[in-house]
Image (cartoon, rainbow, N blue to C red; front, side, top):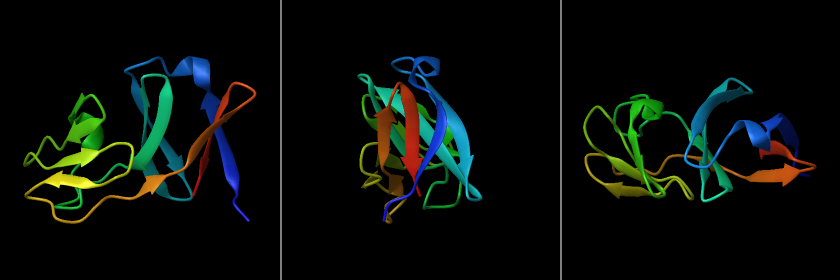
Length: 102
């Protein structure tokens, strides 16, 4: 059975914005892309760099350390130097609240 954790009001994260959320000891990057919400682990699979400091362009984020790119929707790695995907977590909106499943 999937367990969901309420993290914030959807109104708090406007389109194009992102924030960090910690759930069960995992730091997640939560982003609003075209009023759809996505959560990925906040660590580059290349060297563990902080992705929240990277540039978000559309649904892609670029690691600020070495330029690896990832899809914010799926966690898929899009270019080297990273070769492993990052974890993406299910997100839903219930009664105007953002919930994430770990």
